[in-house]
Length: 640
Image (cartoon, rainbow, N blue to C red; front, side, top):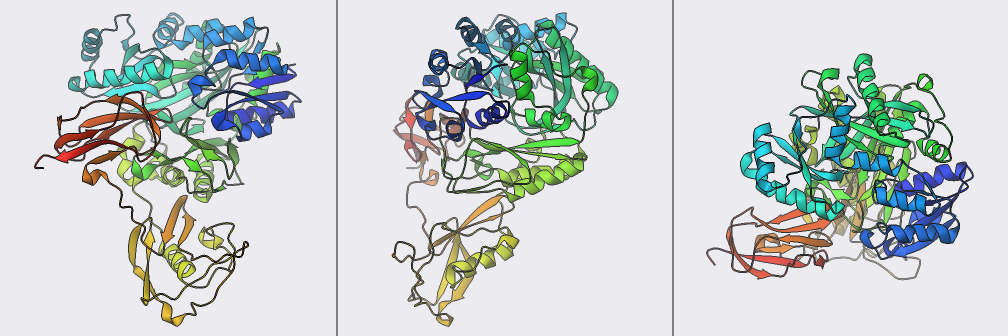
């Protein structure tokens, strides 16, 4: 058995691996970048090694540094987690060549399944059904356009070396193809160093079904049943569940058997996932489920499989990497109950899922559920990595039981000042269409308006906030019965000064709430309450939580006077890197026209013209790192 393990990853997956390793008596070594110097996985590991600057390409993606860290600390094995170098065959081979144990599949298996076009050809040979599409070597835009035209729209452009939702674009009409192809290839080159693509027929009623497989070096391969990962946004999974709703046993047998054949076709060892696309227009049917790709690593959503099978997949990985056989045979694996997982992200769904960065001044995660996280209160969400805060995992006797538990877990989640998608997740699982199980990968897009509409505080919460901010209620306990939390943690008091005016209005996130105005003359405003350092404060702001959302109230307007898009100023909405500049100074632009593309947290964000006009000031340059709020472009109205 492996006795010491270096984890070549960060965040929640590193913490997840550490937990199992510690239970098994395996010593752990963490690696970290500048941004992660004080991260939770660093604090939890037995030892930690600094491997470079904050950008992943200078730290977590530098294999030589990771191998050197393993040797310097005496680690016997390297576990790659997921993302980063987990599916890099050259890195896996380098680990093996260095005399270390690679906790993952053989490099040849990674190569065989890493390129989507070659993988599909191999699956066809193994008798695994694949989605219709173009897998050819000719990558000229003209040939790719012609193939897409021949397949018929909509089509999906996919990076050959892609994964995790990166390098994918849906194209609904021939006129869109060239622009989407350029964007897809640019993202693929940035994320994977390979801009080659393939074309697939886009299924109009698709379900994303995947099967967990596990192989060992003794020739055994088993499956641990399926997961449904259909709830996606921009091809990124949002909520996963196991088993798949509407899956009958004959169809389950067909898809799981195909997954085992796929794994055996590449002599697979370790944990892997075979991903299928299903045409669910007439329900799940074995003859309408096709192979998409294989992920040669542990998946983000592996906890739902663990919850319904009672298996610790990380323990299996360590045992198989140590030369042991798969711990259970197929007949010993059963489905027990239902599990769901929601990905809690630092993002604002009401602002087109704009990533949110900063310090987690307050973080409360539901204690009644399984939480997989790589952060704690006081940690910082940086712009350098994936914006995931945690995975909320629940298990129930059946699907409705699990769905109810997940909704409650999302509702109880509290985070500030960093924004999260907790309220959006709650809306998803409470939606009647999701409750019915009649879902598809287009579900979020179809109901986007109602799912992402900004949450509104209840009248009860508004009353609580108004009284707490304006009246002397500092010493009272937090109103947990309203799912509201106290504000300004660390303070013990405030001074309520008598104001010249007799009424005070509240503001919600700098927007006035004129309904809530109170007569201060009725209250003693001279009372002073001291904080711990002896200073007095005027209480001006309070943050409350309800339904998974955070609401910040202020006694005085603090409306920014900074330039806004309405003035023609296009500001960077977050820290990031400029990947494309579509216009130049003096260019005439139309409302909605793309001006600049910004990459942050592994995603591209397009900034567009707010109205017809002319490009005036231009500060954006390709490749530049910019801070939040920096002026990138200024558009002057045409009549000016």
